[in-house]
Figure: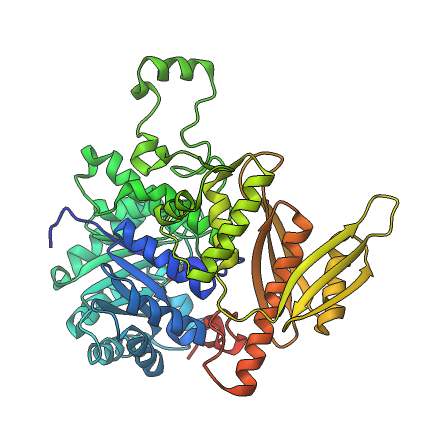
Length: 531
Ligand code: KIV
Ligand code: ZN
């Protein structure tokens, strides 16, 4: 391998999806995986197949459909995880099984109740077992940065001997400091005799805001793979942000003398796609992809920029594909222009979805002067249905005010029949959702309701994300509209329809569980971690 190449291992669909509040459905995961391939990442970690039927199907479909990058799946050092991961990855022409086991004293004592030699044996046996299914194996000693360096070196040497081609050194809890983390990577290079037979990756969490700095220190000390996520999504404070690490290496090539294969001009587009699909907003002043990242406010700066951009700009918005322009379509744009823009953003809709999305675009363009890329992503996402909608909303009327009793009238369509009802509530959302509950006979408890503006202006669409507890499962959905009450009611109805589709599947046993449902608690990673 070219020693100046740093492999970019994207884990947006696995660690990123573990971000509190960032759930993605099956279609959204596939769209993101296609966009990651266009970004030219080296590896896509598509999920943790044993965690839930949904994760399994997502990894399996990504393995089947996404060409170019290596497709990786995560597995604990447990036979059933490895077998499940191998099965999910089988369709991929380039696949990797990523096994992990905690090695630090804290995890050994409190979580795993295992001694060093047991950990060492389990790690080696798991790598050997995984090699039966796949040639490309990655091993991660979880909590590596808090592991005794001599024991870590012993584990790394043993798993390389057992057949791991990549060893990842995670700073699982985001505890490391750059100089210290760099020294750890150097220490491994000095003390692991066979280290030249593997690529050393790093996987840094951002609890102290140091994930990117730690990853840079690691590559300066010999690491050649960086695990990262779009917009820095991930457990707790997130992971190393792909856009930041890539642009740091790109902009400071004079210092690092390292390359990634990333198509940097795709960065802006994928950042927005992931933000819209996960519902996780990018802060305005976020490095590289924030709305202010290239905005110059101070007069003195503007003056400098006008004289010569290099006075205050270390990279150009064009480098990350920002020049594509915000304003895309208007009232007079036809179907062809609409299709062209969806295509440019890498969004694939089926015939019926496309018809519905176009109809909504026309209605939206009629209401608001300008339609932005983000509006199109929101519309497309609403129309990517993965299950038959039992109920469709035909009409919603709400009357509300600070001296009125909020009342909603809802008309739904179910199997060709029209149903109508009305109810009061303590606000327009409460009234609308109560009416839907009454009409469907399904009681959902709203766990979360958040609203964000899709684009700019008073006439912008509002996007509502909801999480609803139906007793036997918790579902989430998003919907957008220029009317925020309508967006909330639609998102809630998406959850009801999804619930009905899961229940139908369970009674008829036609397919595996709905891939878009949240993982059942007993299959959640944390619940099983100690095995
Ligand atoms: O943070 C971590 O340690 C992980 C491992 C599974 C690589 O995500
Ligand atoms: Zn992680």
